[in-house]
Image (cartoon, rainbow, N blue to C red):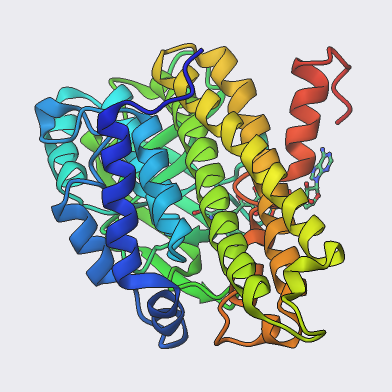
Length: 386
Ligand SMILES: Cc1cc2nc3c(=O)[nH]c(=O)nc-3n(C[C@H](O)[C@H](O)[C@H](O)COP(=O)(O)OP(=O)(O)OC[C@H]3O[C@@H](n4cnc5c(N)ncnc54)[C@H](O)[C@@H]3O)c2cc1C
Protein backbone atom coordinates (compact mmCIF):
# COMPACT_ATOMS: atom_id res chain seq x y z
CA UNK A 1 0.00 0.00 0.00
CA UNK A 2 1.51 3.26 -1.17
CA UNK A 3 0.00 6.53 0.01
CA UNK A 4 2.32 8.68 -2.10
CA UNK A 5 1.47 10.30 -5.38
CA UNK A 6 3.73 9.60 -8.32
CA UNK A 7 6.00 12.55 -9.16
CA UNK A 8 3.71 13.33 -12.14
CA UNK A 9 0.62 13.36 -9.91
CA UNK A 10 2.34 15.65 -7.39
CA UNK A 11 3.36 18.02 -10.17
CA UNK A 12 -0.18 18.01 -11.53
CA UNK A 13 -1.60 18.77 -8.08
CA UNK A 14 0.81 21.69 -7.55
CA UNK A 15 0.29 23.08 -11.04
CA UNK A 16 -3.52 22.96 -10.81
CA UNK A 17 -3.40 24.54 -7.35
CA UNK A 18 -1.29 27.37 -8.66
CA UNK A 19 -3.69 27.95 -11.59
CA UNK A 20 -6.74 27.96 -9.28
CA UNK A 21 -5.05 30.32 -6.83
CA UNK A 22 -4.69 32.90 -9.59
CA UNK A 23 -8.49 32.91 -9.90
CA UNK A 24 -9.73 32.05 -6.41
CA UNK A 25 -13.11 32.06 -4.72
CA UNK A 26 -13.78 35.78 -5.18
CA UNK A 27 -13.53 35.32 -8.96
CA UNK A 28 -15.88 32.31 -8.76
CA UNK A 29 -18.46 34.21 -6.67
CA UNK A 30 -18.20 37.36 -8.77
CA UNK A 31 -18.91 35.30 -11.91
CA UNK A 32 -21.80 33.50 -10.24
CA UNK A 33 -23.42 36.72 -9.06
CA UNK A 34 -22.99 38.33 -12.49
CA UNK A 35 -24.74 35.36 -14.09
CA UNK A 36 -21.52 34.64 -15.99
CA UNK A 37 -19.42 31.52 -16.43
CA UNK A 38 -15.81 30.80 -15.51
CA UNK A 39 -14.74 30.73 -19.15
CA UNK A 40 -11.25 32.18 -18.57
CA UNK A 41 -10.43 29.52 -15.98
CA UNK A 42 -11.90 26.75 -18.14
CA UNK A 43 -9.93 27.88 -21.22
CA UNK A 44 -6.68 28.17 -19.32
CA UNK A 45 -7.14 24.80 -17.63
CA UNK A 46 -7.91 23.32 -21.05
CA UNK A 47 -4.78 24.77 -22.65
CA UNK A 48 -2.66 23.37 -19.86
CA UNK A 49 -4.12 19.92 -20.55
CA UNK A 50 -5.90 19.55 -17.21
CA UNK A 51 -9.39 19.03 -18.64
CA UNK A 52 -8.27 16.31 -21.02
CA UNK A 53 -6.00 14.58 -18.53
CA UNK A 54 -8.04 11.35 -18.55
CA UNK A 55 -8.74 11.27 -22.30
CA UNK A 56 -6.74 8.54 -24.11
CA UNK A 57 -3.41 9.78 -25.47
CA UNK A 58 -4.17 8.65 -29.04
CA UNK A 59 -6.88 11.31 -29.16
CA UNK A 60 -4.60 14.04 -27.82
CA UNK A 61 -5.47 13.61 -24.14
CA UNK A 62 -3.21 13.10 -21.16
CA UNK A 63 -3.71 9.33 -21.22
CA UNK A 64 -3.98 9.28 -17.42
CA UNK A 65 -6.93 8.11 -15.33
CA UNK A 66 -9.77 9.19 -13.09
CA UNK A 67 -7.19 9.54 -10.29
CA UNK A 68 -5.66 12.44 -12.20
CA UNK A 69 -9.02 13.97 -13.13
CA UNK A 70 -10.00 13.78 -9.45
CA UNK A 71 -6.76 15.58 -8.57
CA UNK A 72 -7.64 18.39 -11.01
CA UNK A 73 -11.19 18.63 -9.64
CA UNK A 74 -10.10 18.58 -6.00
CA UNK A 75 -7.33 21.13 -6.41
CA UNK A 76 -9.48 23.66 -8.26
CA UNK A 77 -12.15 23.30 -5.58
CA UNK A 78 -9.49 23.69 -2.89
CA UNK A 79 -8.77 27.17 -4.29
CA UNK A 80 -12.46 28.06 -4.02
CA UNK A 81 -13.37 27.13 -7.62
CA UNK A 82 -15.47 23.95 -7.53
CA UNK A 83 -16.29 23.30 -11.20
CA UNK A 84 -19.23 20.94 -11.55
CA UNK A 85 -18.78 20.69 -15.30
CA UNK A 86 -15.53 18.80 -14.70
CA UNK A 87 -17.67 16.08 -13.22
CA UNK A 88 -20.12 16.16 -16.10
CA UNK A 89 -18.09 16.74 -19.25
CA UNK A 90 -14.72 14.97 -18.89
CA UNK A 91 -15.65 12.53 -16.11
CA UNK A 92 -19.01 11.27 -17.34
CA UNK A 93 -19.42 12.06 -21.01
CA UNK A 94 -15.82 11.77 -22.25
CA UNK A 95 -15.35 8.52 -20.30
CA UNK A 96 -18.52 7.01 -21.78
CA UNK A 97 -17.50 8.02 -25.31
CA UNK A 98 -13.96 6.69 -24.80
CA UNK A 99 -15.13 3.35 -23.43
CA UNK A 100 -18.36 2.73 -25.36
CA UNK A 101 -18.33 5.06 -28.37
CA UNK A 102 -17.97 3.73 -31.89
CA UNK A 103 -14.66 4.51 -33.63
CA UNK A 104 -16.46 7.33 -35.49
CA UNK A 105 -17.78 8.77 -32.20
CA UNK A 106 -14.36 8.57 -30.58
CA UNK A 107 -12.81 10.35 -33.57
CA UNK A 108 -15.54 12.99 -33.56
CA UNK A 109 -15.61 13.87 -29.88
CA UNK A 110 -12.49 12.80 -28.01
CA UNK A 111 -10.05 15.30 -29.57
CA UNK A 112 -12.40 18.11 -28.45
CA UNK A 113 -12.66 16.66 -24.93
CA UNK A 114 -8.87 16.29 -24.89
CA UNK A 115 -8.40 19.96 -25.75
CA UNK A 116 -11.25 21.04 -23.45
CA UNK A 117 -12.85 22.85 -26.40
CA UNK A 118 -15.80 20.46 -26.41
CA UNK A 119 -18.09 20.59 -23.38
CA UNK A 120 -21.04 18.28 -22.93
CA UNK A 121 -23.71 18.04 -20.28
CA UNK A 122 -25.44 14.88 -19.10
CA UNK A 123 -29.19 14.39 -18.82
CA UNK A 124 -30.64 11.47 -16.92
CA UNK A 125 -32.84 12.96 -14.17
CA UNK A 126 -36.53 13.40 -14.92
CA UNK A 127 -39.25 15.12 -12.93
CA UNK A 128 -41.38 11.99 -12.56
CA UNK A 129 -38.62 9.39 -12.28
CA UNK A 130 -36.26 10.99 -9.73
CA UNK A 131 -33.86 8.51 -8.17
CA UNK A 132 -35.60 5.63 -9.95
CA UNK A 133 -34.11 5.55 -13.41
CA UNK A 134 -36.24 2.52 -14.31
CA UNK A 135 -39.09 5.02 -14.59
CA UNK A 136 -37.45 7.22 -17.23
CA UNK A 137 -40.13 8.42 -19.63
CA UNK A 138 -37.92 10.04 -22.27
CA UNK A 139 -38.23 7.77 -25.27
CA UNK A 140 -36.31 7.32 -28.48
CA UNK A 141 -37.78 5.66 -31.55
CA UNK A 142 -36.17 4.59 -34.77
CA UNK A 143 -37.24 6.79 -37.66
CA UNK A 144 -35.76 6.15 -41.09
CA UNK A 145 -32.00 6.36 -40.79
CA UNK A 146 -32.07 8.17 -37.45
CA UNK A 147 -33.88 8.45 -34.13
CA UNK A 148 -36.47 10.77 -32.66
CA UNK A 149 -36.33 11.68 -28.97
CA UNK A 150 -39.15 13.02 -26.82
CA UNK A 151 -39.22 13.75 -23.10
CA UNK A 152 -38.30 16.08 -20.25
CA UNK A 153 -35.21 16.28 -18.07
CA UNK A 154 -34.57 18.29 -14.92
CA UNK A 155 -31.59 19.78 -13.05
CA UNK A 156 -29.34 19.46 -16.07
CA UNK A 157 -26.12 21.28 -15.18
CA UNK A 158 -24.50 23.48 -17.77
CA UNK A 159 -27.02 23.08 -20.63
CA UNK A 160 -26.43 26.74 -21.54
CA UNK A 161 -22.66 26.42 -21.92
CA UNK A 162 -22.23 23.05 -23.57
CA UNK A 163 -22.47 22.11 -27.21
CA UNK A 164 -23.79 18.57 -26.66
CA UNK A 165 -26.01 16.85 -24.16
CA UNK A 166 -25.67 13.13 -23.56
CA UNK A 167 -29.31 12.13 -23.15
CA UNK A 168 -30.36 8.93 -21.40
CA UNK A 169 -33.56 7.78 -23.08
CA UNK A 170 -35.40 4.48 -23.32
CA UNK A 171 -35.83 2.62 -26.55
CA UNK A 172 -37.63 -0.60 -27.48
CA UNK A 173 -35.33 -3.53 -28.10
CA UNK A 174 -35.79 -4.51 -31.76
CA UNK A 175 -36.06 -8.23 -30.87
CA UNK A 176 -38.01 -8.28 -27.60
CA UNK A 177 -39.80 -4.92 -27.72
CA UNK A 178 -38.66 -4.28 -24.10
CA UNK A 179 -37.67 -0.73 -23.24
CA UNK A 180 -34.01 -0.35 -22.34
CA UNK A 181 -31.71 2.63 -21.71
CA UNK A 182 -30.09 4.11 -24.79
CA UNK A 183 -27.66 7.05 -24.80
CA UNK A 184 -27.59 9.75 -27.47
CA UNK A 185 -25.18 12.60 -28.14
CA UNK A 186 -27.56 15.43 -29.01
CA UNK A 187 -26.35 18.86 -30.17
CA UNK A 188 -27.68 21.48 -27.74
CA UNK A 189 -28.96 23.53 -30.68
CA UNK A 190 -30.89 20.62 -32.24
CA UNK A 191 -34.36 21.66 -33.46
CA UNK A 192 -36.94 20.67 -30.84
CA UNK A 193 -34.47 20.88 -27.92
CA UNK A 194 -35.17 23.76 -25.56
CA UNK A 195 -34.18 24.49 -21.98
CA UNK A 196 -35.12 26.86 -19.21
CA UNK A 197 -33.08 27.86 -16.18
CA UNK A 198 -34.13 26.66 -12.74
CA UNK A 199 -33.54 29.20 -9.97
CA UNK A 200 -31.35 27.45 -7.41
CA UNK A 201 -30.14 28.59 -3.97
CA UNK A 202 -26.55 27.71 -4.83
CA UNK A 203 -23.85 30.32 -5.44
CA UNK A 204 -22.34 28.92 -8.61
CA UNK A 205 -21.48 30.13 -12.09
CA UNK A 206 -22.85 26.81 -13.37
CA UNK A 207 -26.62 26.56 -13.60
CA UNK A 208 -29.28 23.87 -13.68
CA UNK A 209 -31.93 23.60 -16.40
CA UNK A 210 -35.15 21.91 -17.38
CA UNK A 211 -34.64 20.31 -20.77
CA UNK A 212 -37.48 19.67 -23.19
CA UNK A 213 -37.08 17.27 -26.08
CA UNK A 214 -39.92 17.66 -28.52
CA UNK A 215 -39.46 15.20 -31.38
CA UNK A 216 -35.73 15.87 -31.55
CA UNK A 217 -34.32 14.14 -34.63
CA UNK A 218 -30.76 12.83 -34.50
CA UNK A 219 -28.78 10.76 -37.01
CA UNK A 220 -28.09 7.05 -36.37
CA UNK A 221 -24.51 7.95 -35.37
CA UNK A 222 -25.79 9.81 -32.30
CA UNK A 223 -26.61 6.51 -30.53
CA UNK A 224 -23.68 5.68 -28.25
CA UNK A 225 -22.17 2.31 -29.16
CA UNK A 226 -22.80 -0.09 -31.98
CA UNK A 227 -26.35 -0.92 -30.88
CA UNK A 228 -29.01 -0.13 -28.29
CA UNK A 229 -27.57 -2.91 -26.07
CA UNK A 230 -24.57 -0.66 -25.38
CA UNK A 231 -26.81 1.72 -23.39
CA UNK A 232 -26.89 0.08 -19.98
CA UNK A 233 -23.17 -0.76 -19.71
CA UNK A 234 -22.32 2.71 -21.04
CA UNK A 235 -24.51 4.33 -18.40
CA UNK A 236 -22.86 2.33 -15.62
CA UNK A 237 -19.43 3.27 -16.97
CA UNK A 238 -20.24 6.93 -16.35
CA UNK A 239 -21.45 6.52 -12.78
CA UNK A 240 -18.21 5.66 -10.99
CA UNK A 241 -16.15 8.51 -12.50
CA UNK A 242 -19.07 10.83 -11.69
CA UNK A 243 -19.16 9.76 -8.04
CA UNK A 244 -15.38 9.83 -7.65
CA UNK A 245 -14.91 13.29 -9.15
CA UNK A 246 -17.91 14.80 -7.38
CA UNK A 247 -16.44 13.43 -4.13
CA UNK A 248 -13.09 15.01 -5.03
CA UNK A 249 -14.89 18.31 -5.57
CA UNK A 250 -16.48 18.02 -2.11
CA UNK A 251 -13.07 17.31 -0.57
CA UNK A 252 -11.50 20.31 -2.29
CA UNK A 253 -14.33 22.57 -1.14
CA UNK A 254 -13.97 21.27 2.41
CA UNK A 255 -10.22 21.92 2.36
CA UNK A 256 -10.83 25.44 1.14
CA UNK A 257 -13.36 26.11 3.94
CA UNK A 258 -11.06 24.67 6.61
CA UNK A 259 -8.09 26.65 5.36
CA UNK A 260 -10.15 29.86 5.52
CA UNK A 261 -11.36 28.97 9.01
CA UNK A 262 -7.97 28.04 10.41
CA UNK A 263 -6.38 31.22 9.04
CA UNK A 264 -9.20 33.23 10.62
CA UNK A 265 -9.20 31.54 14.04
CA UNK A 266 -5.41 31.83 14.31
CA UNK A 267 -5.64 35.63 14.12
CA UNK A 268 -9.09 36.66 15.32
CA UNK A 269 -8.87 37.64 18.98
CA UNK A 270 -11.78 38.55 21.27
CA UNK A 271 -10.56 37.49 24.74
CA UNK A 272 -6.98 38.62 24.39
CA UNK A 273 -5.84 35.55 22.45
CA UNK A 274 -6.72 33.91 19.15
CA UNK A 275 -10.14 32.23 19.20
CA UNK A 276 -8.46 29.10 17.81
CA UNK A 277 -6.84 28.63 21.23
CA UNK A 278 -10.31 27.86 22.63
CA UNK A 279 -10.96 24.17 22.22
CA UNK A 280 -14.64 24.92 21.61
CA UNK A 281 -13.50 26.52 18.36
CA UNK A 282 -10.50 24.34 17.46
CA UNK A 283 -11.94 20.88 18.18
CA UNK A 284 -14.88 21.08 15.77
CA UNK A 285 -12.43 22.21 13.08
CA UNK A 286 -10.05 19.37 13.97
CA UNK A 287 -12.95 16.90 13.90
CA UNK A 288 -14.00 18.15 10.46
CA UNK A 289 -10.38 17.93 9.23
CA UNK A 290 -10.28 14.26 10.30
CA UNK A 291 -13.55 13.48 8.50
CA UNK A 292 -12.28 15.21 5.36
CA UNK A 293 -8.99 13.30 5.38
CA UNK A 294 -10.79 9.96 5.90
CA UNK A 295 -13.10 10.70 2.98
CA UNK A 296 -10.12 11.80 0.89
CA UNK A 297 -8.47 8.42 1.40
CA UNK A 298 -11.66 6.73 0.21
CA UNK A 299 -11.74 8.92 -2.90
CA UNK A 300 -8.14 7.92 -3.68
CA UNK A 301 -8.98 4.25 -3.14
CA UNK A 302 -12.06 4.43 -5.38
CA UNK A 303 -10.11 6.21 -8.13
CA UNK A 304 -7.28 3.72 -7.92
CA UNK A 305 -9.64 0.70 -8.12
CA UNK A 306 -11.43 2.29 -11.05
CA UNK A 307 -8.19 2.97 -12.92
CA UNK A 308 -7.12 -0.65 -12.28
CA UNK A 309 -10.33 -1.80 -13.99
CA UNK A 310 -11.69 -3.40 -10.81
CA UNK A 311 -15.16 -2.07 -11.54
CA UNK A 312 -17.23 -3.92 -8.93
CA UNK A 313 -14.96 -2.95 -6.03
CA UNK A 314 -14.65 0.54 -7.51
CA UNK A 315 -18.46 0.83 -7.50
CA UNK A 316 -18.65 0.16 -3.77
CA UNK A 317 -15.71 2.44 -3.01
CA UNK A 318 -17.04 5.23 -5.27
CA UNK A 319 -20.41 5.19 -3.50
CA UNK A 320 -18.76 5.20 -0.07
CA UNK A 321 -16.35 7.95 -1.12
CA UNK A 322 -19.18 10.08 -2.48
CA UNK A 323 -21.21 9.64 0.70
CA UNK A 324 -18.30 10.30 3.05
CA UNK A 325 -17.00 13.29 1.08
CA UNK A 326 -20.42 14.95 0.88
CA UNK A 327 -20.98 14.55 4.63
CA UNK A 328 -17.45 15.75 5.45
CA UNK A 329 -17.76 18.77 3.16
CA UNK A 330 -21.07 19.80 4.66
CA UNK A 331 -19.60 19.47 8.16
CA UNK A 332 -16.43 21.37 7.20
CA UNK A 333 -18.28 24.29 5.64
CA UNK A 334 -20.81 24.53 8.47
CA UNK A 335 -18.02 24.39 11.06
CA UNK A 336 -15.98 26.97 9.16
CA UNK A 337 -18.96 29.34 9.11
CA UNK A 338 -19.47 28.89 12.86
CA UNK A 339 -15.80 29.59 13.57
CA UNK A 340 -16.09 32.89 11.69
CA UNK A 341 -19.01 34.10 13.82
CA UNK A 342 -20.96 36.83 12.02
CA UNK A 343 -18.21 37.13 9.44
CA UNK A 344 -19.05 33.58 8.43
CA UNK A 345 -22.27 34.80 6.88
CA UNK A 346 -20.68 37.56 4.81
CA UNK A 347 -19.75 37.33 1.17
CA UNK A 348 -16.37 38.88 1.95
CA UNK A 349 -15.12 35.96 4.06
CA UNK A 350 -16.12 33.50 1.37
CA UNK A 351 -17.39 30.50 3.32
CA UNK A 352 -21.19 30.86 3.44
CA UNK A 353 -21.07 31.08 -0.37
CA UNK A 354 -20.09 27.39 -0.33
CA UNK A 355 -23.07 26.21 1.68
CA UNK A 356 -25.56 25.63 -1.15
CA UNK A 357 -23.03 23.64 -3.14
CA UNK A 358 -22.01 21.30 -0.33
CA UNK A 359 -25.63 20.85 0.70
CA UNK A 360 -26.49 19.83 -2.87
CA UNK A 361 -23.61 17.36 -2.67
CA UNK A 362 -25.68 15.30 -0.22
CA UNK A 363 -28.47 15.04 -2.81
CA UNK A 364 -26.76 14.90 -6.20
CA UNK A 365 -25.74 13.12 -8.31
CA UNK A 366 -26.99 10.34 -6.08
CA UNK A 367 -28.55 11.03 -2.71
CA UNK A 368 -27.17 9.86 0.60
CA UNK A 369 -30.25 7.66 1.07
CA UNK A 370 -29.73 5.88 -2.25
CA UNK A 371 -26.09 5.21 -1.30
CA UNK A 372 -27.21 3.83 2.05
CA UNK A 373 -29.66 1.62 0.14
CA UNK A 374 -26.81 0.44 -2.11
CA UNK A 375 -24.47 -0.32 0.79
CA UNK A 376 -27.24 -2.04 2.78
CA UNK A 377 -28.00 -4.29 -0.15
CA UNK A 378 -24.62 -4.92 -1.79
CA UNK A 379 -22.24 -4.75 1.17
CA UNK A 380 -24.42 -5.89 4.06
CA UNK A 381 -26.57 -8.34 2.10
CA UNK A 382 -29.89 -6.85 3.18
CA UNK A 383 -33.05 -7.25 1.13
CA UNK A 384 -33.91 -4.46 -1.25
CA UNK A 385 -36.43 -2.30 0.60
CA UNK A 386 -37.99 -0.37 -2.25
C1 LIG B 1 -27.02 21.01 -8.10
C2 LIG B 1 -27.57 19.82 -8.84
C3 LIG B 1 -27.03 19.47 -10.06
C4 LIG B 1 -27.56 18.38 -10.78
N1 LIG B 1 -27.05 18.09 -12.01
C5 LIG B 1 -27.62 17.10 -12.75
C6 LIG B 1 -27.18 16.83 -14.09
O1 LIG B 1 -26.27 17.50 -14.60
N2 LIG B 1 -27.80 15.85 -14.79
C7 LIG B 1 -28.80 15.09 -14.26
O2 LIG B 1 -29.31 14.21 -14.95
N3 LIG B 1 -29.24 15.31 -12.99
C8 LIG B 1 -28.67 16.30 -12.22
N4 LIG B 1 -29.14 16.55 -10.95
C9 LIG B 1 -30.23 15.75 -10.40
C10 LIG B 1 -29.82 14.81 -9.28
O3 LIG B 1 -29.06 13.75 -9.79
C11 LIG B 1 -31.09 14.38 -8.55
O4 LIG B 1 -31.59 15.53 -7.89
C12 LIG B 1 -30.86 13.26 -7.59
O5 LIG B 1 -30.53 12.06 -8.26
C13 LIG B 1 -32.09 12.98 -6.70
O6 LIG B 1 -33.23 12.82 -7.51
P1 LIG B 1 -34.55 13.68 -7.17
O7 LIG B 1 -34.12 15.11 -7.04
O8 LIG B 1 -35.57 13.39 -8.22
O9 LIG B 1 -35.03 13.19 -5.78
P2 LIG B 1 -36.15 12.05 -5.46
O10 LIG B 1 -35.81 10.81 -6.20
O11 LIG B 1 -37.48 12.63 -5.64
O12 LIG B 1 -35.87 11.82 -3.93
C14 LIG B 1 -36.31 12.75 -2.93
C15 LIG B 1 -35.80 12.28 -1.58
O13 LIG B 1 -36.28 10.97 -1.30
C16 LIG B 1 -35.21 10.08 -1.07
N5 LIG B 1 -35.52 8.76 -1.64
C17 LIG B 1 -36.02 8.48 -2.88
N6 LIG B 1 -36.14 7.14 -3.04
C18 LIG B 1 -35.72 6.57 -1.88
C19 LIG B 1 -35.64 5.24 -1.41
N7 LIG B 1 -35.97 4.19 -2.18
N8 LIG B 1 -35.15 5.02 -0.17
C20 LIG B 1 -34.80 6.06 0.62
N9 LIG B 1 -34.87 7.36 0.23
C21 LIG B 1 -35.34 7.60 -0.99
C22 LIG B 1 -34.02 10.68 -1.78
O14 LIG B 1 -32.81 10.25 -1.20
C23 LIG B 1 -34.26 12.17 -1.55
O15 LIG B 1 -33.78 12.55 -0.30
C24 LIG B 1 -28.62 17.63 -10.22
C25 LIG B 1 -29.16 18.00 -8.98
C26 LIG B 1 -28.66 19.07 -8.29
C27 LIG B 1 -29.26 19.45 -6.97
